Length: 149
Image 1 (cartoon, rainbow, N blue to C red):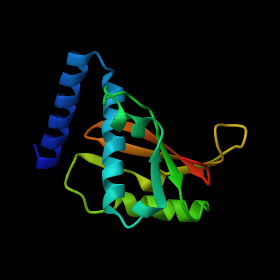
Image 2: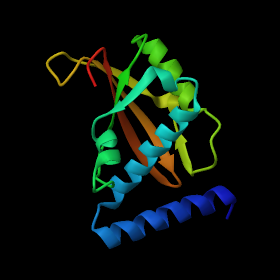
Image 3: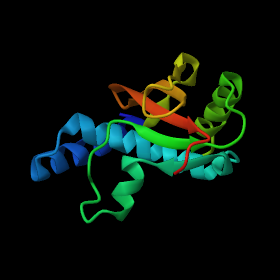
Image 4: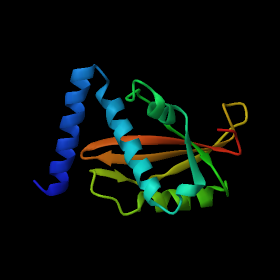
């Protein structure tokens, strides 16, 4: 077994152990782990000043229950809201040099769609396939444009 596979098995094992211990859903914990690894890469990238964290992931930082599950990531997008600019930034984020964490983001399969005005806010939704070991998931990243945090 190679080093990456060992790490993926270790991550899966720790998340499964935690799910059993806390009663949390394993898939939700795995999704949260992948979202956190995306945020880590965002922090390493030159795009970090073009996004502001908001929503449930931000509230997790301030909560007495820091592991509150969320199924998506909410960001405020600063600057160009065109799909091409967002796609370019997301690619740069996931390609940021980061320590091995067993997560692979598949930017080539990234889908972008407009979030309509009748929904919570106007912006862009990114649906990006990701893998953690053999597990496959789709990350949902909602980016508001010009809304208040």
